[in-house]
Length: 559
Image 1 (cartoon, one colour):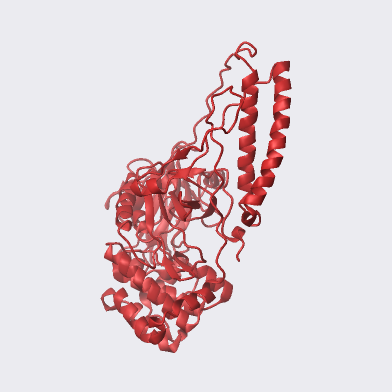
Image 2 (cartoon, rainbow, N blue to C red; image 1 turned 135 degrees about the horizontal axis):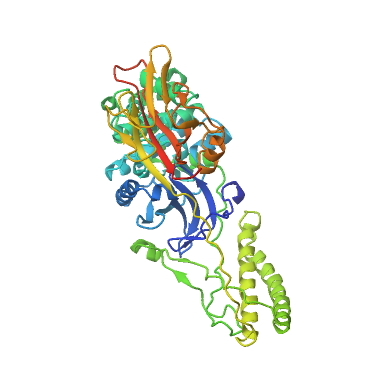
């Protein structure tokens, strides 16, 4: 069995305890759109909860797209998809819940055991193609199909995150994570063209090629270099297993209309597998590829409820408090939430100190007893990384008991009413304001101040693009200073503050910057911005002027 600590990470200080009534058991990871957590339905079925990043949640355009895509994703019903079972697009922040798939991603499986055998590659393509039939049938284009979005369960692959990437737009998000992974993009994506179901078929071919080779078919390197290869060169099919080359050729055609449909890919795979397909040989293949099943943590123990009146001296006497998740489907998947911890009473008097000491002794005895009980009831979790959470809950229960005991002895006459001491209100941190989908070219400009986007012909903005035959293209400003974070993907307000502290640069060369590159900017007014390149034109490859598509997040008066 895989240890739970390989997959399930403890919640961090900035993670919520519950989302939409679902009690979170562990952190599963994070991505460009949000963080992902493990939870359970009331019946104990594990689910993956994705919570949208706050920066995106504040963008009305994102919310509209997210709402539309969630409604579309509800219609997807396929054996090889992770079904959407609940969501709340109106929550703050928005979230969605899908069936949790126990098993590694394709990228993890290949990293662990190397390229897949030919038969497993065909089974993979058949499963993913069937998933795409269901996804496209619901009117969704995935747009970001790649090895990390294909999970390998014991009974076959599952495609995840279908349709949701569209909610974030076609360029980078305000958090700096590019939508669409260059190694698995189709040529039309690299040219910022229209995405269709055929775009997903190209990504299917790329994903399957990764499974067969153990590396991306178009190689690694800077994003723009990889996109250049995809747009302007044909794939080297000689690297792939010879019997499968005709299928890969159907998926990886440069022109979308020349690619096979998912149904045609599925038919090709069935014909190739022959009797093995009808005899149900898939499970044996997936058990070998996916390895042993994960140990999924059990639902967290029910927290004690604050069901007794303050001052009663009893604790945990009432039944558990429940909070129903949002939505009709979620009502069946309701989850338990902890009752708010009370505010500890003062022990300023000798009587209060004596009661506090006695209560503390009782709490310690109960805590020791409960720890033994928890350890026995959660033996499968003690090595799985989630036992810490149950013990932490026991500590909180104990503190509530101590508070109740102290409150019972301290009457209003025994404790003087404290005089409120005015405290200065803490200054609120600057609020991020996202500006997605900005375009910068030789004819327009961008400003950090409103209006941010200046149309073609308006070069009065703070930031402009200038191109020359010898020098290439640069991004420059007369007032704004630039600085790039030392490590990719780390751009945020604090990082930019540090980077810009001594920055004096007003000009950046663009040819060294790829999709996903981040630039910190500071306006003389004190506004700080994070500029994230989504995609840019390849110089010299088109008659069209050079351009950049990017997202920008601005923190007003932040320096």
